[in-house]
Image 1 (cartoon, rainbow, N blue to C red):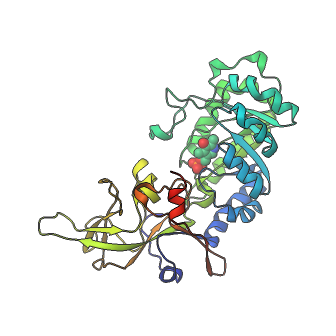
Image 2 (image 1 turned 135 degrees about the vertical axis):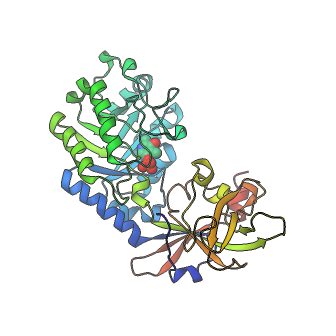
Length: 384
Ligand SMILES: *Cc1c(COP(=O)(O)O)cnc(C)c1O
């Protein structure tokens, strides 16, 4: 989502701050993903790490085959709320959690040979499908923090670590190396997987391509993704899983904010608008990635007549959302709408500085909205 202009009716009505998810946008993505499943026979799972708004799970479950968890709590959430398969991966499963995970999940992905040796027999005895996360050691991106193939990565077993005599019982391989990428880096990665791990593939039942596929972004090369899937199916007889997170709720939600104060001064390079949302608390990827979030009816710095630094209401000096420009001057009380705020927001937010958490609001297909959840002082206090 680049520059956009969106003024929905609900914006005047909701109290801010609020994450607002629109069903029609979610369904748009889900239809694309269901189409992919229907055309290729692949299985698409929701990676809950990106989007765990479980009031949407019944809807998502009507389109996708299951959910993928990064650990115990996500696994339990899917068990309780998501109709479908339940896969779990963890860099290191723990003794004290494993019995409980066996209750919730049907697919277990182990991160190393030692994890497989430690827990595999128990999973198999419980009738679970077991897979190994492999590391094809082939980077296709520059974001070191999001690159599982970086040199010191803990994610996935390398070819040199595979112990041929201990693979009996494994029915799948899993790799996850992409982040917000197209099908081209996937095709490249798949070549690395085949070159390194190809001899093991005929004895497996499934392969999981992980997440990071921006399948629902405009211009995504769907035919190439389909060729990648069919190649695994035809050459090795494998069932193919994908577990995107972002792609499921990409551009499906907003963060509604209000301007609290405008600070101006003769010596300031730019006026500052302090908002009731914070980059650090409510959209942490703005600082972590970092990136500039899309904002309705705004332009780049200097592009429109009135430019402002937009900043959060915390004490962190760097809690800056970015410089944006507007046709009219900003006024306290005015609402602003940030785009693409469904993913990696609700699941990552925090109450640093005692900041309140945004409401969670859902707009149904007919356009009426309801508040799913509000938060208060207790949500701050209870964690401390
Ligand atoms: C993060 C992650 C995903 C989802 O990634 P997206 O970039 O949100 O699509 C899927 N699988 C694994 C193992 C992950 O770590």
